[in-house]
Structures are given as C-alpha cells and as structure tokens.
Length: 276
Image (cartoon, rainbow, N blue to C red; front, side, top):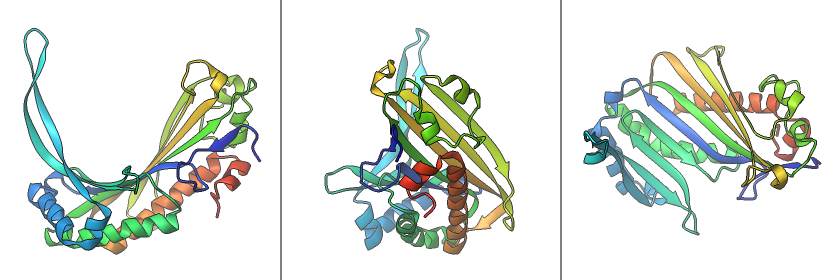
C-alpha cells in the first residue's frame, strides 16, 4: 500500500476519475444548426430515457460586448447558440450534462464508476440522438474522450509520493521532475498515432498539474491532477451510427487505459483497479 498518495473519489468507487467527457464533432459546424439542436431538445420532452436522465434544460448564450473609447465594456446583445441538458443526484448535485452546440455534442458525467457501467449509460443516450442526426444526413469528422483524474499526497519532505504515483520510466513527464522534486509543476505533452484498421489518427494529450493543497506552502500535502484527452480525427467524414460511435469510443478508452498504465506506478494501478 502506498504510504503518501491515494486517489480522490467522492463516490466511493476505487478510482480517481473526477469527470469523463464524450465529445462528437460534426463534419461542418453548420450541420448542427439551430433547427437540428431544437429537434434534439424537443426529443428530450418526448423520450422517457432522455427525460429521466436530464431533468433540466438551460440555454447556451453568446454575448456581444461593445468596448467604448474609455475602455468600458457594455453587453449589447446575447444570442442563444445551443442548449445544455442537465441531470442531478438525490442531493441536487449536477452529475451529468449533454451539451448541444453548433460545434459539438458533448456528454459529461462526474459520477463515473467503471467503463463497463458508464459507457452503456452514455450509449443509451447516443441511441436516442443518432436517428435524429441521420435524418439530417449529419456526418462526423471525429470524436474525443477525456478523463480527469485526481490524486492527493500527504506532506513528505523528500517528495517520496512522486515515485509512489508515477512510474519512473514512463517517459510521459519530464525527467527533471525526478531530479529536482519541485513543490509545484505542470507538464503538458501531445502526440499523434495512427491506429491499425481505422481511417484516421489519434491525438493524445497528457496534462499533469501538481500543486500544494490550499496554500503556497507544502505542509498540507499536494493535489495531483491528470487529464488525458484522446481525439480521433477521421481521414474523411464518417456516417453517424451507434455501431461506429461505440466502436471508436471503445478504441479511445483502450488508448486512455494504455497510457494510464504506462504513467502510473504498479501499486497505485492495483489500488484503482486500472488493469482489471
């Protein structure tokens, strides 16, 4: 058992995921025009699954601000550009959102459990939205999967928690961190890969932020945020089908798992059931 570091999870699940996001990108922004977004919003009022999962709807507004000669900004108008459907837990906390925007459809949840449980829930929403997109001949240029993980570490003058959390030879963060053990640091990297049998490429971004808890002083310990984004861009527009979306989201999930296994030390991997 790791001595200094542990995953943060408010739901009691054995992992560190704070938020999981599933994003679908139309081939052209004009494909998801206001009529299409209104159609999906109207479907929510008629569909029991969507109505049960998303009990509230709010507008996404875009404000136009005019800057006067004296440098004071004044909002001249606001335009409605889309909608957010929102679902809540029993305590009234927001736990899922479906963003309907001209540039993307974005499902996000802060109550991630395991992939085998969460993806079928997302897929049921996809199954209800896809027929509406097919009627308008909407195609996809890509999709994105993002996980945000959070760990906490107790104060340790030697910064031993770094080797407890990160696999030393992962190559996914700068070696200077191991050499100097700074109190706060940020690493951001990205790289492309060409998956076998898929007509496109994946851009993976790994964003690690380490900072002291609630203070500039290290005595309270540290918070370690790891955000991984995996974006699949197709070589040419792809038809919107449930099968296509499910297959490629599974691919991106395996991509995330592969790099988390490489980044995280064995003991923590076992604690969060990463390889199960």
